Image (cartoon, rainbow, N blue to C red; front, side):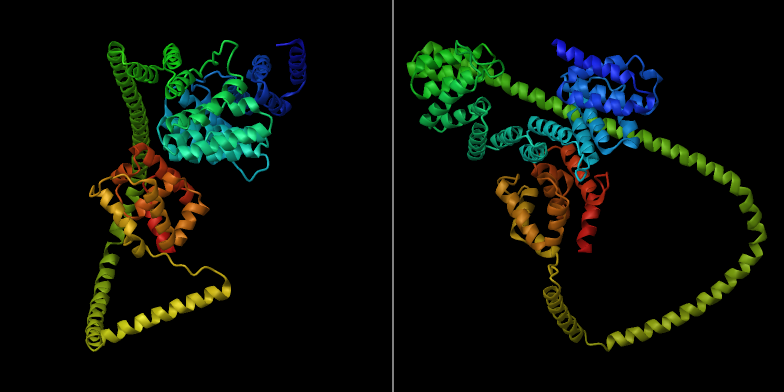
Length: 582
């Protein structure tokens, strides 16, 4: 750190120490702003503060801890202890402003992510989003963007590309609020990752092309060129070698990632394998072999052995073909085993999180039951004597009242029996066919009246028709998939889209509330539609290609957005009531 930086920090410390206790919060806000751009400097100031914080009130101590945790997170220090962060969250949840609450929950989510509790981190990020007030001109869009960015990373790790797209789009929107067009363009380029997982390579190439063009216009040629390796790989796979060659030239000469010897910057070494496949496609087997062997040095075994196997097949070297066939097979097995281990870890994490939630709920229920028992016993003791006293005193009066009530009931029963007999006779004399015709005519007249009134007022005349939706062809397709009477029990993207279109057509009011007014994510909307169709949770898990915890989280999120309810269990009943109301 240079001399001017030390002078600047010293001036801040002197100013802070010159303030009395009632101004500590405003001075901590100044340190918070320093942490946004220079977290290391902020930590120096906060270390000086630590000498006197024990003399402050709770509000200032909690504010200090919040900013210290923020600075640690921004400086790259992983928060791995919840001894303070949970106290900070609890305090600001009841006392802080929206931005403080959002920041506290975000930092708690980072703690869970750092200790490998992805499901709990994801739920905490959702809680952080709920604390944000985007209608406030002072909304902290920087923190909100970081939240959506972390959620996108979790969705990517758990192979949920549709939810990742949802998170990245919100991330892009938040970055746009900050007014930095360069960062906004880079944020948009992040959409290439989930679309690559979906196999939509045309979309990936379009995203890269648009981002590259805009960054170049903004003078960010290095960052623009840095986006090209994925496009290079796709074009090699498509045998579009002239396009790949142009992109390789730009990447290697303009990205600034290569040294004088042609070595790429750390973390980018997979490019050697990509370059090897390019040389292989151009039948330059010697160059391809050099790049594949170079990529082995950095642990990219699967692609490297696959490439070397192809090289020696072209050279027709039998010993090397056998050798690299075995190595490639081992690399694939290792990769597969690692994927299984990762999946097991994720499932274990989900199980432990669900189990801890269940245990916590059980303990809370036990505590509530114990309190109810104590209250019940106290009430019984207090009122027991009073009840015994009144029982004997009122015995004779109640007995007389019962006789009088029985007499009244007898007369009432006789009158009701007579009325029923008369009603039966009237029903026998009634013409039901005529009555049905009258009701149908009345229904048509009411429908015409609704349309006339809608035209006159400009209000919508649409009416949700659950029966039409349930009897539609696309719902029939989904029911076959649910019952495993279809070749592919998991709907594809086109089938999900067809279901949404049918839902918006037959249930326009419900669709407007869920998709537009409440802005449900794609997964949340799919879950709601299947619940309306009375699909079981197990079928929803299978058809969305998810896991139970993901669906439970989606139901909880949807229930909170639509009905402000946290529980996932009441969502279906709420949706059915919503449909009836429309």
